[in-house]
Length: 239
Length: 239
DNA sequence: CGGCTACTTGATGATGCTCAAGCGGAGTGG
DNA sequence: CCACTCCGCTTGAGCATCATCAAGTAGCCG
Image 1 (cartoon, rainbow over the protein chains, first blue to last red):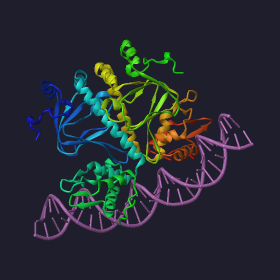
Image 2: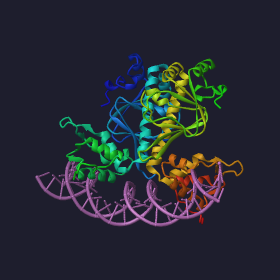
Image 3: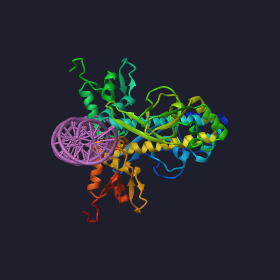
Image 4: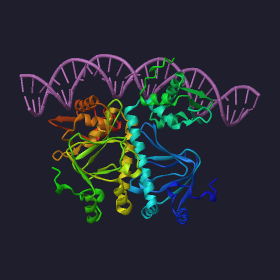
C-alpha cells in the first residue's frame, strides 16, 4: 500500500478544474503519508496550518468532551480534504482528526494552499461553496440538538445512512450497519440510547433487523417520527 | 432616519480595502431599506440570493422549531453583513433574520456580489476568513450543546456578554442586561432555566444583581462553573 | 390605577444518561 | 474442533436534569 503510483491528486474534487500541470506541481510539494485505522492525524488546539487531501480511505473530524465523550463533527471521504480552516485563518486546529480506514493522505503547507486559492478563481469559488455547505450542515445540527430528542436525532442519522433498497421499491436499507458508537457520536448521544431507539423502531414494526443491516419499509413513517410530527397512531388503526 | 447621507458602505468591514470608487458604484446598485424593531428581513427557505449589509442597527439570525421555540444562531451588528450563503451556493435561505434595533440595511443582488468576490482577491479572502470563523463558532456551539448542561450554557452566554468592570478591577459586568428570552434562545434553553441559573449564581455569591445589570466578582469561578470543572467546594472551605 | 410585560419560583413528569448485568458472535490458541 | 475471551450489543433500574405548567410578584407606561 501507499504505492508511489497512488500519489496523485487528480481525483480531489477541489482541483477538478485545475490545470494538470499545476496539480503535478502540487503533488511534488506534498508530504505523503499512510495512516492506519484509528490512527491520529491531528489534534485539536495544535499549531500548523497544513491542508490534508484524502486520496484513499476516510477520516473522522471529531472532538472530545472533558468526560471523554466523543462528538463526531464530520466524516471526510476520499477525494475530499480537511484542515482548511487553520490554513485560512491561521488559528489552532478546531478539532481532532482520526482515520476511519487505512488512508492515504497528502499534506500541503498553508503557504502553498493559500497561494493556490489566491491564484485560481475556480479554486476559491469551490472552497467558498464548500464552507457554505459546512455552515448549513452545522446550523441544521444546532437546530436538531436544540429542538429534538435523542431518539429523534438517531432516526435522522439513520435516514442519512439509509439507501434505497435495490429490490423492494420504496424501502430503505442501512447496510452495512456502522457501529452504534459511531451513530451515537454523530447524534450526540450514548450507545445505549441508540440501541433503545432502534429496538423501539423494530418493536413498532417500522424497522426490521436482518443480519448486518436494517430495513425500513416506510420512509415517510420514519421521517415523521424523526421530525416529531409524530401522530404514529394518526388515523390508520395500525397495531 | 434613513437619510440619504447615511447611505454609505465605507464602514462595512468586508469592503475595508476596496477602492472607494468601487464602493460608490456598489452603493448605487443597492436596494436601501429601513427596518423597525422585530421586523422580518428574510424568511428561512425563501428564494433569492441578495446579500445584506447592516449599515446601522443590528439583526438576529434565527430559526424556529415547529413548537415555536426560537433558536438564535448569530447576532449581526453594524458594519457586518448577512445572506452570503445563499449568494454563494444558490440554495434557499438557511435561516430567518429579524431586526433587533431600528436598522438601515443595503441589499445587493447575488450577481453583483459574486462579481465583486471574483474580481477582488482581498474581498474573497476576507469572506473566506469570515466563513471559517462562523464554522468555528458553530462547532463550539455543537460541542456545548452536546456536552454541557443547560445551566452551564447560560453561564457561557453570560461570560460572552460580560465586560470588564471599569471600576472594580478583575470584576465583570453585564450591562445592560438583555431580556432573558434572548439569552435563552442563544443558549438553547427556556426563560425559566435562565432565571434559575442566574438565581443560583446569586445565591452562591458568584453574581450580584444590581438594578439593570449583573456583576461577577470572580471570573475564574464562573468559568469553572461553566466548563464543568466544577469543584466549587474544591478546597477553600467557602460557605 | 389598571394592565401589560418580564421575571421568579414551585411542582411535576418525561427524557435520557449512567451503572450494571447478561448475551451473542468472531477470533484465537490450545 | 472446542473452549475462552473480547467486544459489541441488549436490557433493566435508578436518578439527575430540565421542559412544562401554573401561580404569584415586580416594574413600567399609559
